[in-house]
Image (tube, rainbow, N blue to C red; front, side, top):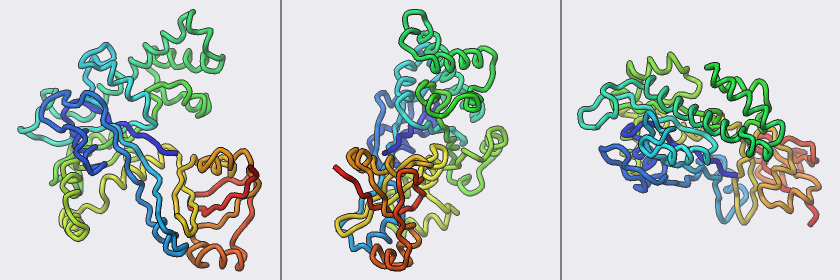
Length: 357
């Protein structure tokens, strides 16, 4: 499976610049005027994982295949988007298609880059976006609970939608629904406000190391958990450098990790994802699965026939595979296990599936 993250925010906060940096491309038009992005840009990026190279070296694999993540550059939203302001309805519909939302927040001053509001205020800006998403959810709920539409919805979803509407009307945090309903049911509801969120505080170069008063105020209110400090402009500059130049430049400005790596790590965390590997002479490959995934379901990521005809999974942990120099020695040294249908795949497992066709 590949997961999709949508980059949202007010106009001119750096969404397209970040998208181009993350995807190492110039797909998204980055310009100094509102709504320069109309249709969403989509970029598919390999998920960096040093374990792949180590496995491939031992297995003498002909090729390495990374798992991927998709980034979607969604046009700027404005106050009133849920009512169509700034073509908002169209843009809100694009958010429904992503697995997680990256909120891009402007945390820098500049006389050269337009701001749709008279002042820079990251807390206000986020609240505008989240309010519009909430209003869009309310409208969606009301339509789906109308008599003619209600008959096409199962009882569990009706209960979720009615509870969500009560929460919105009573000004309660919609994420509290997670304590009342299971994750699968909530995902089926399609509510924008329930999508996992990452907050990206976009700063200038001088703030990249320690942040600034904007990021401090934002993190004080929304916490460190899902907040990242990134400079979209710096990320774009880094893409133009070779490996040695990149390393030296990052050391000079005090940047320990590039934005792509931070976003992927945070994306895996909030979406509760793990990675398993297959490795042999032909290829070494990474596969993305949900945490607590049973072995047959993991096998189904490779091919549906693997899940249907699942018998056993030959399983070696990544560390044991490396320490024992591959499949043969791992088996000889008792580090390979045969796991059945109830086995929960762990992050880093190296698997070979036995199945009937």
